[in-house]
Image (cartoon, rainbow, N blue to C red):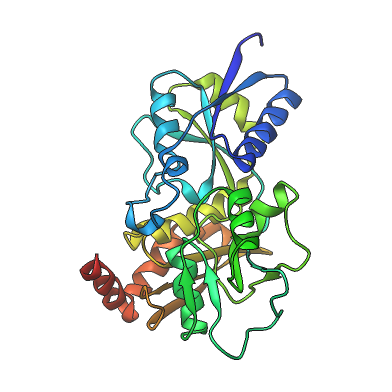
Length: 305
């Protein structure tokens, strides 16, 4: 196995950690690899809110181009950043075991651990997090927060905000989870949050075989269900759609929701199916949600756009 697999990654600390993890897994299975750093559009525009710049694929597009052009052999992504329909010629090579799917509230220094009596100022660039927060705390103010994990943590510490919302997995993977961070157990995650995906060219059998050794079937099933739910709702990162599938014994339990961007309206769905019959669970849940009020919210969002 003298061939060196070129691993495409963004330059952020978290992205490099994910790519290094894949590099180690490849090495454990006898494959040589090296990292190739690619700058994405999402890393260059750090001011515009994600939901205003057509975010679907913003963190993966540059890597897709490098992959299809042969500059790299595989690319490593946070799975929640990957469009539900991947670029033609690119396929999933492996899904790693899922880390925490939860969102965290990182408090500013001296901020109370409970919600203040008055208006809190919370920072996030995620329209999903914004909508869910405002649904629970309609009087609060939401500020935009862009940048990689390190940049966002610094901005929080320099601000007058009550706190900001982060993905637990991202902070934990690079050892930056603050001690005062609060898990938002009531906040449903983005589809595939906490999962890492490796992609390659569809005809690259060498890389497909190499990555198959560390593919996690359970995570792949749950994230596929969540992404089917998102795709069936025609949603992207600019739509407040959340989903979580979990394996419980011989069953898969699913919970999903859609909210209006201001958080005032919310529709949710919960379903459970056997693992053997769960392949279409996400699509079925989306169909049920649309029939029970979700379509009205989706149309409202489209009209706003």
